[in-house]
Image 1 (cartoon, helix red, strand yellow):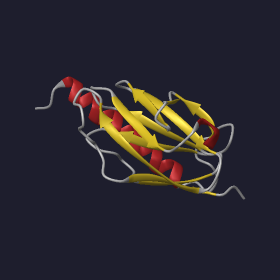
Image 2 (cartoon, helix red, strand yellow):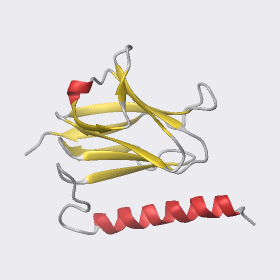
Image 3 (cartoon, one colour):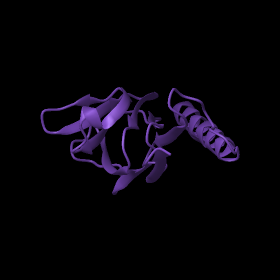
Image 4 (cartoon, one colour):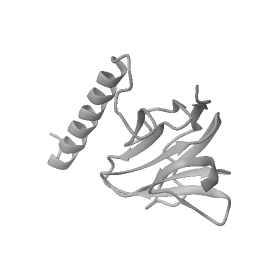
Length: 142
């Protein structure tokens, strides 16, 4: 039998999947934000959506449902490339990164079209990557 903490994480992941599928069934934006839709990426043992497609200005939100913190790292992305951010910061190495604690989130809104590739790392296990080549495909705003 699964531990209570594991059951809580499974239930939380199930609720997130339900919310995502319910949002996809609608013809309009699933969740209103200042700039349009919110696209959710759930981080557990891996990354729930390896190729997110969003329009410029729409929010992409990473939700960590793990028991340990994770890092989401975009190489080559600068603060001027985004129109909104929560939890991310610029580093001196020409990339934006966020450390997301357990049961927390971070988000970005991209200004222009293009493909933005990122990595998700386990903060407590140096060098352990939780994904393989995940990206956000940003479509130009209409």
